[in-house]
Image 1: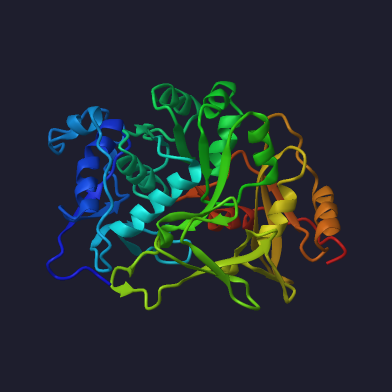
Image 2 (image 1 turned 45 degrees about the vertical axis):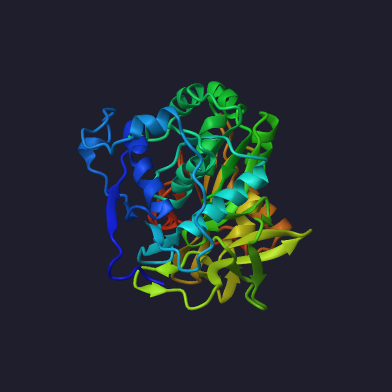
Length: 412
């Protein structure tokens, strides 16, 4: 269902500074309660505002009252026609970005189920862009719990020092945050930030696959990471550590393994294109292992090399278990002979020595197949990212395409 002609929409551009983020909370509260217009969150942030830490003169009234004495926000009545509260723009990983329409009931269902899974409400740190669903949900959960979120100033980008400083300002009895794997990697490379990470009762990690090596490093450091799977269309993460949140149902298509999601957290559709069913068909492949959902990667990211379909996810899993590998992304690189060749980009842990292409191929061949083994390898200082922190596969493909490929190894 799309908003009716009488529905008002407020275009809100969120900047990175604490006061400006906190300043939008009263407006978000009104949108969720139905007493104010829906919010259309935008990532078109004026550059002149990125470094500002001053509260704008136009800040909505009541900001200081909210910050000093937050009041838990009650969910909407059980009304199937509850209006759209927020629209968020997708990251565009499937093509042209779309505007996802989220009702108050979907956002509340997600926030409530999250707190139930984590053991109760708490104080959240916003360390992601608030205009994307993962960051927005930090604000929604804070309003639902009646707590004031801490906010990192991301104007200069995410840094371990900034994370440490922002964490030091939190005073809640239970602390939560939501991060992406690249942020976790950078935090674990910094001793002070690693100690700060250990203060959180739970750290939600999503946006892209989390390697076993990274999970092990975080566990050894005392961090309590919870992997999440979801998207804007499901009001954010709806599967935690492979287990769907209460009320969320996951089904898999026979043959393709396409993940389909239904439940109370589902969006009502896209702007101008409401969902025709109460089930959202994702672009991801999944499987069940010991009662937990395993994400195999995007169906449209499958590499076709020599007529053979190769899913990047399992190859990335193998690469991320190699000693010294912090992150790995596998893409299809255009190849005149094979159509596409398997290429891999790695980010190493500090001081680690890069594996050779022969070593990488041997490990992937042993665990998967020779067909899945990368034919090209590059080591990057950092992965190029897009949106809320997802690896930019198109940019990585461009990097690998501009790098001379080695001679074709035997065994493919």
